[in-house]
Structure formats: structure tokens, C-alpha cells
Length: 81
Image (cartoon, rainbow, N blue to C red; front, top):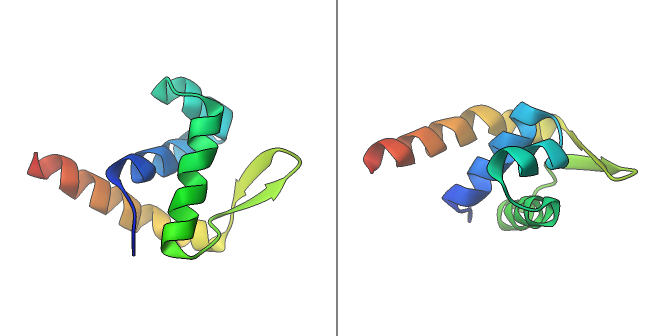
């Protein structure tokens, strides 16, 4: 399982804000950077987390399963610093 803290942060931002565009605004990065990070996370985990439909990313069942684990890993990592 390969992922970075930044990828988890971006994944959670998309989930919490409902879209890549909203997440990009919240994180002050480009929408392309959000999409790239999500694609890299999916590749590293070898799973599709969002269904793509007409420029929209809709979280799927696998993505929903990752949410609690991603939150825990993100929070644990932040607490370690």
C-alpha cells in the first residue's frame, strides 16, 4: 500500500468538500493537482476510489471504505509530529 500524507489530505478534502474543485480551493492548489494526487493514490492502492462521470468525481463504495482508515492514518501521522 503506497500513499503519501498529502494524498490522504487531498482525498479527505475531496470527500469533505464534495468535489475536486472545492477541495482545490480549500487547499489552495490547482484542480489538476487534486486530480493528479487522487489518481496517484488510486494507482498506489490499486483501487478506484471515485467514479468519474462528465468531469465529476463521485466517491464509490471502495472510496467510502477508505475514509475512516484515511482519517485515522492522517490524524496519527499529524499527531506524531
